[in-house]
Figure 1 (spheres, rainbow, N blue to C red):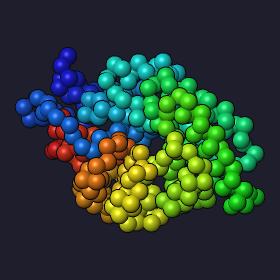
Figure 2: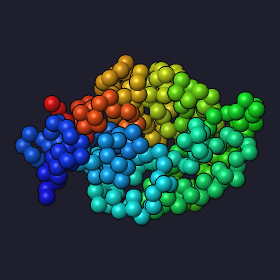
Figure 3: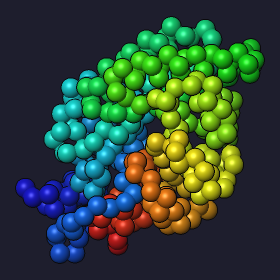
Figure 4: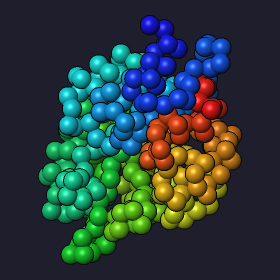
Length: 298
C-alpha cells in the first residue's frame, strides 16, 4: 500500500473523517517545512488507542511525536511503532508522581527526593531506548506545608541531579512554566521564574520548554518573550486560548507567532499539545502550511 493510500485508509478506518489526507494530485511535495510540528499523542488522536496513534499521526503528515509519559508501555513496543512509521521521538516527561490522583510532578517536594531520583533513572532508560534526546521535568504543585524557599531549594537540587545524570546519557533536561488556572498551585508559573531556577541550577544541560498556551495565560507578550529567550528555549508547545484547542479556535494569532518563531531561527520541534475541538483530523487545517505533505483543507 502506498503512503498516500495509507493516509486515506487511516482516515476511513480509524478516524471516520471525510477530510482528505493527501494532496489533490496524490503526490508529496519535497522540501523542509518549518516549523517542525510534533503530534502530542496524549491529547491528539484520542479517537484510537495509544499504540495506534503512532500510525495515525504519521498518516496525517507528522514526522515527530511527543506525549506525557511512556511508562505504561514497553520501550520495545513503542520503538517498534516509531521505526515502523519513520517517526522521531521528540519528548516525554520524567515520572511525575501519581497523575491519576492529581499530582503534577514531584521535583519540588522535599519528601519525594528518592522517588524523583529513581524516576530520573527510569526516564533515561526509556529515552535512551527510544532515541529521545530531551526529557521535560514537571516541578509539581507546592503543598501549603512547604514554604517557597524549601520548594525552590528542593527543585534546584533535584534538577542539578537530573541534569547531571541526563548529560551522561547525552539527553537534555527541560523545565517549563505552567499556568495556575489549569493547575492551581503549580510551582513554576512564569518564564522569569524558570530562568531564575535554571540559573541557580548552574548546568548547561538544563534548558527551557516554552509553552505558548500556558504563557499566554500567565504573562502574554509571546513573540518578544520567545525572542529574548531564544538561547534558552529548546522546545516549544502550543494550543490556543481559551479552551486549549487547536490554533485558530481562540485569541492567539498563530500565523504571526509561528512565522516569528521561524524568522528568529528556531530549529527545534513544536509540540501540538492541544485538545482537538472535534476530531483530530478535522482540526488539522491550520497545520497544512507546516506539515506540507498532506492536504488538510476541506
